[in-house]
Image (cartoon, rainbow over all chains, first blue to last red; front, side):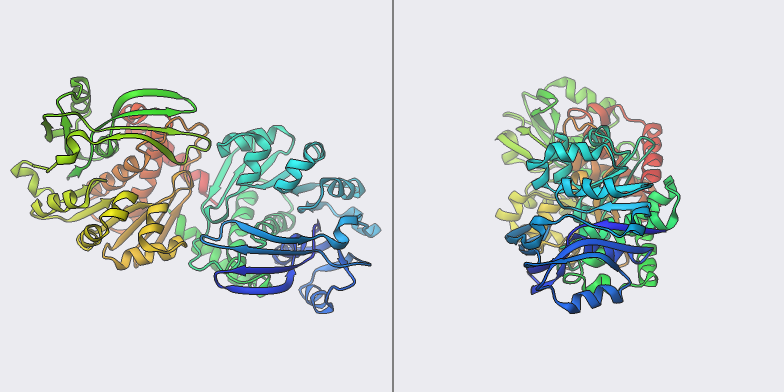
Length: 299
Length: 299
């Protein structure tokens, strides 16, 4: 099974207590792809500007990411600049330059419209809806968003939520959109907005999964040195959706396994800058840490 | 095996989004006892004033708590008043009246000096040291503290840490005392201060346990309605130390089981005001939730 992901391909400038990097390859679709590629063929849908370095394209292609629908337009690539301090749990955004992203309308190849597994990573909900409307036979649709859209495009977001199977949010977004401070209540409320499954990511504290049949919870995999958490949430989503696309059947054991893989791959992501660690991952490394994780939480 | 706990017996006035209560029975030793009693005989060491309601004494005795060393002195009982808002993760202290606590010097009965399992709940580190110095044959000593002592009595606290086996802290305290923002690094640093085992409580996010041989981590048990989190940390410590006292042998499987029990009993504590829910607990209820917890995190 293959998967299609709509999101951003960006140039990230990041400063953390471990150092800094200038204009690395980043963006939600890049991080998602680098994780999901471990399980399935990933079709990336995003936009870049004329200034986008060829080496990044070569890199993504080398990693097996299908770039048929990565559009290049006149203008500058989307850039994000951020800094992490202290416990590295929240990024301080220093600068955002939308560039070509501000006029992004996804265009995908005809054959891609038949892909059944779809992830709408964080972009304008109207762009997400536009892509979804083009898909002919969606079987499993996941959605991510962010506080900006919750605040400024709430109606579009709520409309879109009715059409997706899985809503993936971090704890702050879940609380904001649901209006509930307790995360179990928040998940229930988000469930009532449409999606059958709700995934609440809690950064270093792990994840809560909610559906009508069961609640699943995991702590974060213990990471002794966080270098750069940028993209951890997208990496998580990539592992989760990627595993489900490979497993094909969306049942309880597969959902649990998918979330555990997601947590493990995200734990690698934060150990290096940008895509440094996830680009080097093999399933062997991932499975070793998955087993260590299993032992870690066993009682 | 029995256990001895040094701490506070207090009158708590609490306001939370679920309502408010005036001068309930509270304090670290009370919460610890209500949890540890499920596994072992609990000897409580604390001080109360002349104004302490007899009904609370009767209640503790009825619950099997051994009150031989609960001293009554002239003056008022220690009182704490606090409020919780929003996500209920942190208490806003509105008022603290030390009363008799300010001149507390624990006195214990001769036969209690032979108890091997000891927990020094949060009071002045010098008082904790004083009690510990009186114990003849400590086998397993646990210690809790708080930000106030870390700030104002750091030397005493560090001296005491060399003499205990287990340090139990919440995440903020662990970060403050260790100077490390990453919790695994914080645990390692705290380990280097003396205690062979470090337990970092993360409230709704669960717990991290660290020793030289292994790291254990659990999410919080998913609680859909937090009524009053007061005493959850002491309840956690009571379950943990109580189980280890009963199990007698401090090995890896017992430590893991003790922490899981601790998390489960603490999850009951937050579902009611004060000691409301933990006072009514039976091992049957606890074991049912322990099994549900096991299923919840399984993958």
